[in-house]
Structures are given as C-alpha cells and as structure tokens.
Length: 379
Image (cartoon, rainbow, N blue to C red):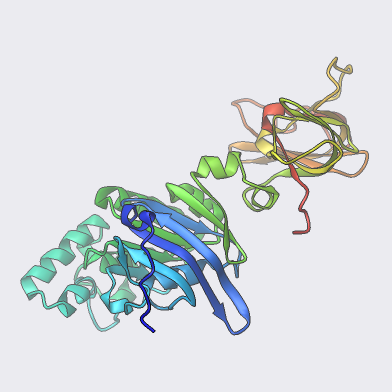
C-alpha cells in the first residue's frame, strides 16, 4: 500500500524548530508523550524540568541522535524526522567539553570547517572570529589542558558555532563548572546569543540558570510540557499547581473555597484568604492549593487587630537571616504552617528587624499576589 506523507503543520513553516506530536519510549518507559514544541528563529529557549522529565530526549530528537516512535521533527520547515544527524543543520554543546587534547584551541574550533573542506586560511579565519566572539583569541595557540574549565567551555561553544548551524543545542553545558564560573558563562552565552542572533535551545534542571538566560521557558514533567512562556509569566502566573510548586520558592497551604467572584474567598486553618487569581474551574466547596511567593509575603510585628480579617495570619517568628542584599524571615502559624518572607535590605536596616525568635507576628500579603489552584498536591 502506498503511504501518503503526513501534512506539514503550519507551525513548522513559521518556526526554526518544530516538534509535532512526538512520542518516544525506551523499553516500557515513555520518555516523551505526544510532545509538541515550536521554537522561533533567533530565540533562546530553555527546557526546564526535573530529572527524567524528557528534556534530553527532546534535544536528542532535534539533534538526530534518536528517532521518534511517533510524530515529526522539523528544522526550518523541512521534515528531518528520519534524516541522519550529520545531515541536519544543528550542533550540540555537551556538559563534557570533548576537546581534542592533541590540537591547539584554534584547530579545535576549526575542526568542523576542516571536515567540510574549507581551506586552512578560510577555516582559521572563521576560528579566529569565533575566538574573538568568546574572548579567547589570546589563547589560540594553547592546548586544552592549559585552560580553565570556563575557558574550555567557551572553546567548545566556539567549535559548535564554527559551521554556523541553524540551531545550537546546549545540553546542561555548565553543570561541571563551579558557581562563579557558571554565572560568568551564563552572561557569556547571553552575549554570544545576542551578537549572533542565533537560535539556542538550552536544556537544564537549574532554574536560576534558565531564568537568567532564556527568552522563553518550556517546563516539562513526565514527557509532557506543562507550560511555555516568558520567565516572568512562568514565575508570576504558573499554569497549574505543579508548576507553582516546581518553579521557585513558594508558601503553600490548603484552603476551602467559600465563594468565587472577582476574587476567590477561602478559609484555611491559619485564617481567611482572598486570592486575586484562581483556576477557572475552581468552584465553591472545592479544596484549593493556595500559593504565595516569599517576596510577596510580609512578616510584621504583632499589633492591634486590623479592620481587615483576610490575608492577615497570626503567627510566631522562627528566625531572621541576613543573606547579603536580602533578609529572610520565617514564621509559623498555630496549626504548624510555616511561611517564608524575603525582603530587600535597606542601608542601616537592623539585621534582626527588631524581632527575636518567638515573638508574635502577623503574616500579610496582598490578594493580587495570591493564587489558588485545584488541589493536585499528590499528582
């Protein structure tokens, strides 16, 4: 029987990379489940998720290192689902630098153009340009073992860019670096991306890394995408309770939904709560998961009872910790719910906030910073 080709989705023509309803299994384990993702030309997309969520599998399908069981992979509108890796216009930077120890830095970077038949003059000119881009032109004649970890990673980046790929894939490339070098390389990657206007797809489980660099984030869980959006959208407006718990720190508690209107009114063990955002399918009588970010939470000295009874919870101070430019406070309510607060330190501010552990306090927050989700705590 003659098999008709599958139609090409419109998104494949409009995106630099498009995965359409892709599934992939290893043995009996589903690594990806009907996974779809579009990456625009010139975008820096970070794929974020816990270990085993399918991040690296998605990257390997784009690179051509794996073939999907179902679905299609497109690069620049071309169906490359069954196209070998060497025939795809992509390159990958891995956590291990995999530099050739017997070649100097210049020849390591020039290796790809050499394999494509460029003359020595042309490939060295290209390699020097890229070493200038990653600020390593002075190290061109040195061997990899003479370089620091951060410098070796920049050489690996330059080498991956040497053939001017349509898409650069980065698989947790900074995982082997210490914190200071990771921060430096994050800035370098953003700068290189900006100067090249290239398309970068960056896989990581490090949330700070993803939020610091990406134009958009794709948050994954168990082979599916839970939410795609800008870093601000993902952090401020999580699509569901799982994303809210996974991304960043959060104060969370369960509450009973009393009524739904322009805001949601809820009753929790510590007190009454008004949530400015709530799931559309949340109804009166439901149990909700209430989420408040620590930076939107205030812990204040206990005083006269205010007129408002919502979003003002009586508690006891646990501790105050000064952490450089911020101050972190924790308090516990009578039912055992612990709330954290993060606030910027001001010049001359006393480290203790005029409080001592055990002092009575109020935990307060604005309704606009409170989000109520259908309670899928165990999902």
